[in-house]
Each structure stands twice: as structure tokens, then as C-alpha cells.
Length: 146
Image (cartoon, rainbow, N blue to C red; front, side, top):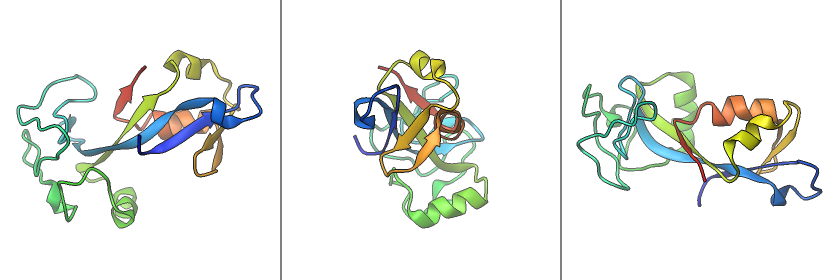
């Protein structure tokens, strides 16, 4: 699966043996209407979008009609460019890329970890479990549980 892998140290010497999960792009999402323009599902309520097409994104939100291409050059993409990410961080666009987090272990196990438990990103960045929860898990619109 493409995305950012996160590991934690629960006493093991090798982080690769303790995969927490994978954060990946979930495509464009209308944060005003709380609906995915890819899957047609609302992350909070589970409502289905009548315009569901698996694996491709819509050009506008079916509810409020805000357009994806108001902000992105190619709305059919599921992953943002570096420039789009930078711009997205500066402005809170109503339609922007969402994140999904796919757990490799039960979420309850992650909740039981101490706040200062070391977590490492597949790119080598180190953080605490508290930082990981707030800046990865909590911002994900979709949570996929094993």
C-alpha cells in the first residue's frame, strides 16, 4: 500500500516489527458538507454519495457544488502535489485532500501506549505517540481497522 508507514517501539529493538499503520491520501473531500468526492462516503455519518465512482474523483461536491478544480489543476487525481500541500496548509479550502489511516494493529492498542512512546515515520522522522495521535490519527477523515 502506498503511503506513510508508522512504527512504534514497544520494547522491540527493530521498529519494523511494530507497524502501527499507514497514512495515505484519500482524495478530495468537501470539508463543508463532510463528504468524500472519491468514495461518496461521509467520514462521520457514513452517508453515501449518489455519484460514487470507485477510484476516481468528482469535479464538484454533489451537495454544495463547490468545485475541486477551483484549487487543483487535475481533480481526477487522488494525491496532491507538493505545491498543493503547501497551499493547503496556508488556507483552509472547503474542498481539499483528505487523509485515511489504515491501522495494522487494533486502535485500542494504540490508545494504551504512553504519550512519550517513540514513534518513527518510514522516512526516518521520530516523534512521540502523543504527537502521532494528534497530527496523524486525529486529522485522518477515514480510519480503516483490521
